[in-house]
Length: 436
Picture (tube, rainbow, N blue to C red):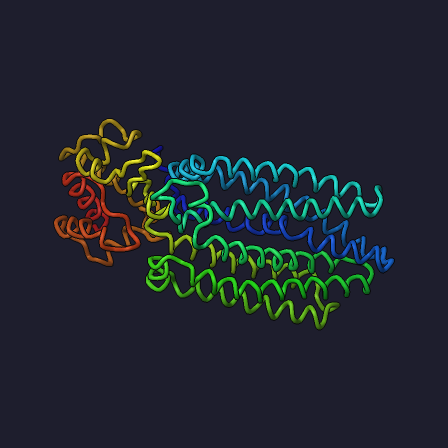
């Protein structure tokens, strides 16, 4: 466990969530855009429509700059934020799926080189060769999604991995296939939204009409398929996650998902019927609606994974909660309860490893940072602020606060308290102090 990355008002998890939500736009665009591009380019050649190649070039340039510059930067941002927000979580994923990541990076290299080759060879190589480059890029991009989805779904539903430690036992888990279909369908909706925005800048009205109508069909179909895949995904969720869906997921997030879905369906339908009525500003607004829907969906997915970062293995506060015998990993709760979280954690200031009357509140705050800050902020305002929660419970007695800490393990969305009785008393004293 590394030094705690304390982000005032937001928490480290929300910083990671903001970067990851933005990253979905360029990453899913990179996976889906070339399918639309190759379709339009093929149509341009077959129907002798050179005016359509203007869209192909503009759309490819957007893909190159947005997906492979800003998308790559946000991808690095995810790795950095995940590493400092939850180093043991990212370490667990790397150690279990290092060859999965390596395979994905091989295909990513093909992507990065492929987008430059495709863009700069348009009109400079024969048509068949250029289309082959596009197809190689499209398939390669989708394969990166095939790999990443296995690792992401593993975090929520690790399958038989806790018992076997097997790569594929965790990779092909119960939510893998529905999530892959869901993400594939959504990638077409995202790609279609950006295609419509690019098409609004075309000079030829006939080309604009054709591209917007085509893209809107792809987007509408993608959302319809996504709705079926979402239902499949919800049916495949672990029982605990289904319970958390109704228990802790705010209604606002659920409304955000369905409102964005409905608004985008209406947008694509209107674009199909009135393609020349779509201007750049409404097209950009549609992208913002997509962001709201993605944020709501991703936040929901993160919340139903609680109290874990990797289900049935690693708690959100980076304490290992279960033995993984095939990996030689031991649960830590019993050891921490015996030795103390302040002694087990390597980066605690020396003056706080032993609790005294003089440092009780400081030690309690350190324990709160270690065990609570993954989900709560210690400020008065922000994401699930501890001071507000303490005030709501009207905690004025340390003994009562200690009893609440003892009961934490009974809440399905919170890790159990890990530490000695003295540490529990110090954390209780700190919580009570927040009410003053």
